[in-house]
Length: 301
Image (cartoon, rainbow, N blue to C red; front, side):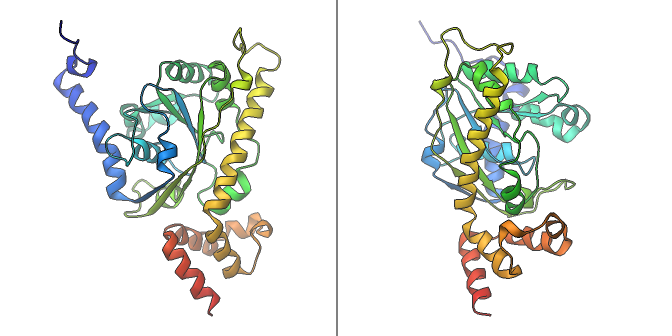
């Protein structure tokens, strides 16, 4: 008795072609178009295809989900183990913007702010089926630079990732990560990403939440459902913040040296200054080696 053909072999030629282009083409494009560096890639690929896992990061750009896919895609990424990464996208944008509607092909599914439950339930369902989902506890793009992340990552996160985790009864691991440079590569208002922008992905140790597993499972009507979901989101954001502080140590040192200000003392008005934002954008495009040279140059002035 022969094995049954895989589902994609039963598709039409064009559907199969589309699937293969997405599977190999999108991650390969990200790696060729940008200068992508993945830190702790082995940790990021702890869970292979068939094991449900949530990837959580900061959110600076529409590129974030594609960057995550390029970081874990098999066979494009080093140590890559995944063939499919699902992610939530703004339902209104996906419906009204042709370019973003194409993210349906890349694993995107819509979430609507006025009624997020269908998307969250869908995420929990596919996680239980062994797929992975990319989510940001921030819920939307918040800033485009590491300095923005410094001030925003610990502000009030959305409860979505916590709600998905509880709907999966706390049994799904979460891999925290920090993405550098995505906002500088493709920030709000830009349609074409900056060619060869430097982007790095730093994976943190997987987080597990079995302490929230219940014999009867969770229901959104449980009085402690939403407070617990918010608590989980805060825990995850704290870890992402720690990853950011480690990843951006040299970046922040240069900002402080250049402007003679401690990062924590930079005001919203100063952050909004056009020349400051331009300097940040250019600095975000520096690799760690280039950041070292920039710091040496400022120190020797």
